[in-house]
Length: 60
Image (cartoon, rainbow, N blue to C red; front, side, top):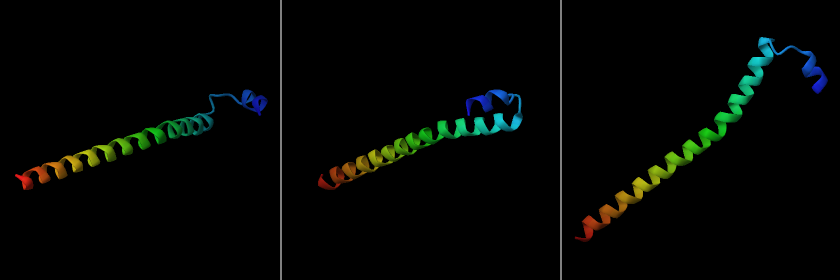
């Protein structure tokens, strides 16, 4: 497999495009997952704070 890839010149745009797409995909996927988790955590925190403030207001 390595022999084949070494024989093929890297200047071939198709190979570069495919490898770049694969690399970018593998990089962006975990970032997206982290981002969604972060957003969900923020939303949950905000919701909890709202609940607490509502309880405090109703108790007074």
